[in-house]
Length: 74
Image 1 (tube, rainbow, N blue to C red):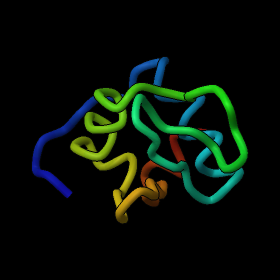
Image 2 (image 1 turned 90 degrees about the horizontal axis):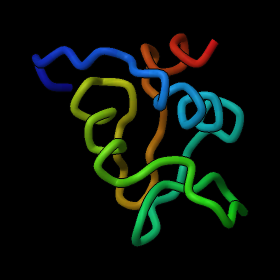
Image 3 (image 1 turned 90 degrees about the vertical axis):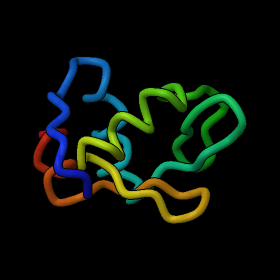
């Protein structure tokens, strides 16, 4: 995790909630999707900001919520 602190923005709530429900989100070309989803839940630029801020962790094509990310979606 980076030392930078990225504030939680309203647009981050839905992806974090879906990441908590499904356990992870999947990267496809233009954004992050929940497993089986056909519509992106957020853009890749927002996903990178959430990783940078410590809300999500990237593991290859999977993005998993951190402990901080799990609490934020509540």
